[in-house]
Image (cartoon, rainbow, N blue to C red; front, side, top):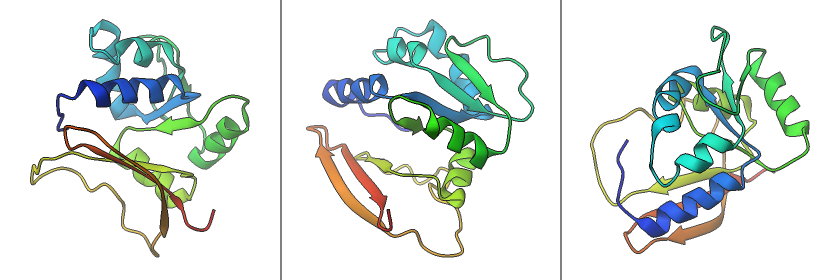
Length: 159
């Protein structure tokens, strides 16, 4: 993933992490992040290590190598319904193309936060899955950073 050195955007991102009720991800993303964040001195590390995390996996048996992480091994839609019913802050899902695609196809995404970086890499996994019909979105917020990074926040138009 491409990154741009932008302290203002990094601070904004860390604030969003602290606002999260839980950080959701798939198994592959968990394995990458669990190997990095517990030992990192990155500005986001404290938040990433202290906020609650949920890894969606039917094969993972332990998440002990990253503090504050639990495993959701049931049906994804049912697990999301349970998590949304828990008291607390909003859920943040950010990790794993397959996992993100499944959330979009299930129609459980309440808000899309898209980050546009001022760079073209010409490669990468598709952001959205193939869908039987379009998910129409409504722009509810945009934030521009001096580096040229944009955060665009959309909600499904029918919600």
